[in-house]
Length: 231
Image (tube, rainbow, N blue to C red):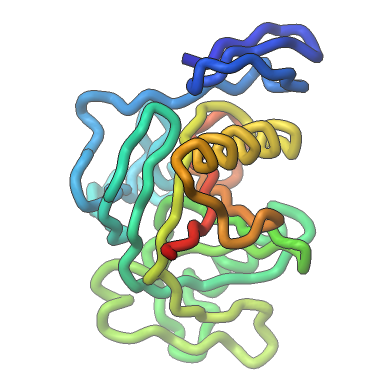
């Protein structure tokens, strides 16, 4: 189990039983799945705010509607899960500022598209980081998304993208996903994969899934994911 201290730079014991130096991660701790959390095929999210932050922003209201992003867990270790994701569609945008990125996505979801269609705001909020920049996305799920996916307005910065159909490794933690924290868990995941004879498709790319109210910066459940070579 990972332990942290409140000092700026400290020695921590990782889930792999090794000791490493971590910087500014006193607010982050690994996530242990609750016995009540689903362990099967689906990652479940709801359109209602939850006590632990695993829900959509409270402004959505308390209507209990479940949405799922399809994946199969093919391997589970103390450090990470190996998941095969099915196909699904997202609305995505490039961004510099988090709030600006969220606002752009929400404009599309709340009817700012060619069909004036409204989609459910889903969880998690996914950000992708690579040497080419960063993007933010939300999955388009639910009844309206099954009927049709609206094209973005001509002047919109949103793109509709088909994704999934890939093997991803995911490591969970609770806290605020600062760049230092993300790098710590990216490195821990890379080391754990290497120990099992696996490696990321691109060492310079990763994704962050964040759960909870969209506009909040409070500690929350996070997942850091990397695409893994299948060969």
